[in-house]
Image (cartoon, rainbow, N blue to C red; front, top):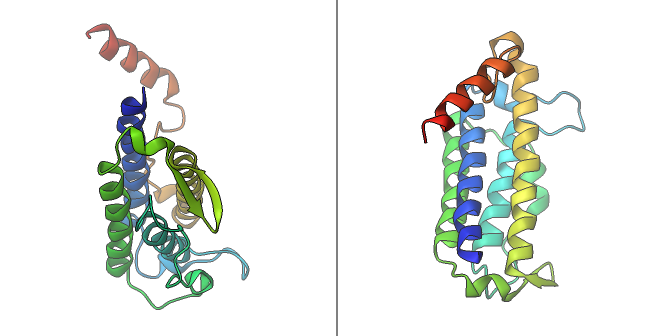
Length: 177
């Protein structure tokens, strides 16, 4: 069961990475910095934050506190002059750190105790915490891009009005298996 957990977890993490990548790729250098209000985060800020989180949490995942001394979390929420290409580079580096760390975990590792900000939890609990955190922010990224692009947004899921057709196509695919 735990081996399946690691396989399915890696698939879900990859899915969120791909969703974020597809979102970033639809925007230009100016659009990644759009903030709906002064207190909001831009897509670039969300990626900066996720990068910092991923590098901190997944470096020494099993044997170091997830909140590293070198992480400057507050700076992740400051606007930086960054290009889309550089932003994608940070995005990919962060996900590389996550996926490499996940690949090195064993079933036995899931029950080990880890710490995040001095709070103890099992590795599995920490992993689920990260998965939900990443899903939360990727959802924000998608929403921002949909607001920015409006009718030019290329959906990452089932297009409006296409639910029934999609359902029928899935029935056909799975009938053949």
